[in-house]
Length: 135
Image 1 (cartoon, rainbow, N blue to C red):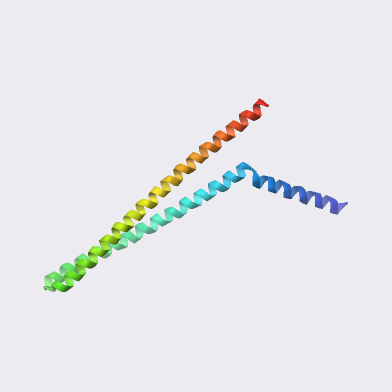
Image 2 (image 1 turned 45 degrees about the vertical axis):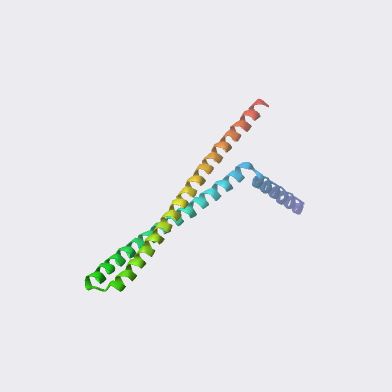
């Protein structure tokens, strides 16, 4: 008798767990957690990009200073090399700025999509509650 009861309770437990997993509220919660995780990852990428941009900016300043020092000494060849390196760094900075801007746009789109999904879920919830009240 005890085994039957335990088996029945285990079966009902599994059925209720499966039903909860199919529940729209649980699905919505999983989607919200996923959206939050995606946004957090993108924010981390933006922060890392900003740090890299600052490092490249400092390197550009150092190259400009070294170029100025080389020109003071009259070393034109080294000054040209440093100038080229500085231009390369500035180009890399522009690319990094574009990547950061793109990541910010992606974050904004995710936020808008998340907000629209939340509004749709709320409307569906109200619709179901309203229909349940009519019955």
